[in-house]
Length: 267
Image (cartoon, rainbow, N blue to C red; front, side, top):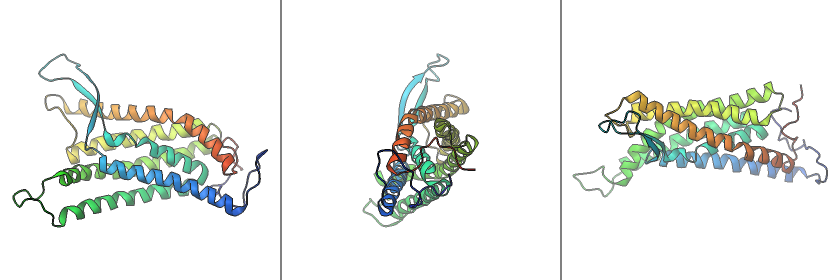
């Protein structure tokens, strides 16, 4: 099975399903590619705006029992909530449209990040109706400040994590000869999420200074808690998406008239 699985002239035969015309086949395949790419890019844009505007407190643990230092909060940024869906989208694109298209969507996502930064910058430099004594006050400038920090962190982390995700996905796809769908889905996402979470937390703190850090406690233990909490959340979501990835892959293979996901690749 080559990387170019979606060439309209290639059509897998399924019992009980009619053979499709080339135009119908092309529209189906490109339509689902646009769906996955659009969901990926739309989620990414939403993440960049929401980003670190709010942290959701999952729970607190008082490790030392000292009221002076307070409890350690386990929290995730609101922008993290929809982020795991982006890895599911790139897994679907990798599975059915190949590594080249998956990488293309990742690079377009980077351009989208830059576009968001440009619009936020332009909105800040153009004249507005703010009071003369506080020219950079208001909701927009607060969102802009937080979004700049989030986008800077996410651009670096996103590019590294998504490219790792695509690379590891195809590594396991090649090593297992296209078998073990669960391994390439989870193996790629779990590794890339660790890269992403670590980079985002460290850059968000040291560059944007936007993490809710307790000055009464040690810095690195708190950063490690943020990394662990974010990664655990993403890992659980990644493991949970194994079922929709399995069901979706087999359904899409039939709908798009492509070989089932478990079929070994041609040597």
